[in-house]
Length: 170
Image (cartoon, rainbow, N blue to C red; front, top):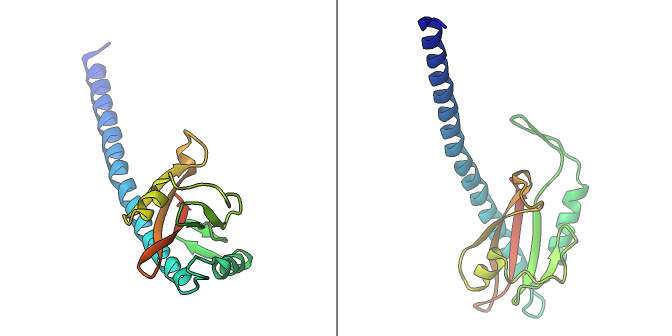
């Protein structure tokens, strides 16, 4: 093998490794900013919806009937939005409400009502008066099924009577 060919192969290997490293570094910088922007929007949404529930308390407890009606209407609404390369035709927001013990009283997916979510970070921390958020996979080990959940307290007369959590797939 000639010297020129060896030098060319070495240079190609260096360029390839440099390109791989640069691409990897750029992606490692972009993903956290994407997740931060998404989480920040979920914070606003959870606080807004928790305030709506606070204005509709029944006997000092969250009554998610108004929220349930609104989310059912949203699911039935037809729309089409072109968000850069994404063609959005439905709302993929998940909302659930728990009582002051962490038991789910409402779930927009309809599958978790009655379950104990008091151990989930978003609910557990919020019930303690802290900022509650979590990231979970619906399929263990599959990063493509990751969702972020952010919770806000539902308050009545200064105490936390429940938690509203909003989730969205990444």
